[in-house]
Length: 157
Image 1 (cartoon, rainbow, N blue to C red):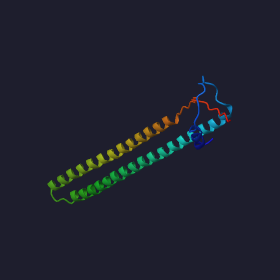
Image 2: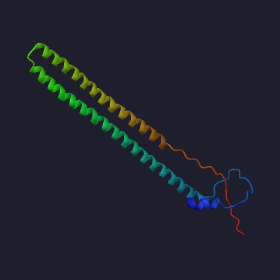
Image 3: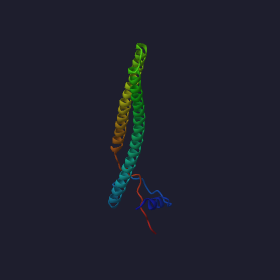
Image 4: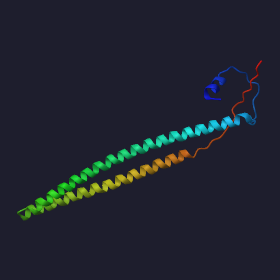
């Protein structure tokens, strides 16, 4: 029986004859029940897979953007360091040379900080990916239970 037929059946008028004391489910329905349960579990698993893929794609996109931005900044600092070194070696006075060395040192400190930021960002991405995997693993541990709520008997007159 499909969902539409079940919904139609449950919308029919009926009378309560007696309450049940937890009897066994009709044997003919066992197969249908198992098939429906399997279909629902598969649907949930597919939905979780789509969710995981979407979240992983977002995480990868964010990580790539962050990495590309920091790498650009590092390359720009490398270029500035190279220019400062050239200027320092071309300096005619000791004062100009010392000022150039200070500038080189400051630029190298900035570059080192950007490199640390890049590694920290990669660590953060790995942590978030681990959290995402743990969350999905938690959703995979499904527990199902069958509880008979009611029984329908048709009396066709």
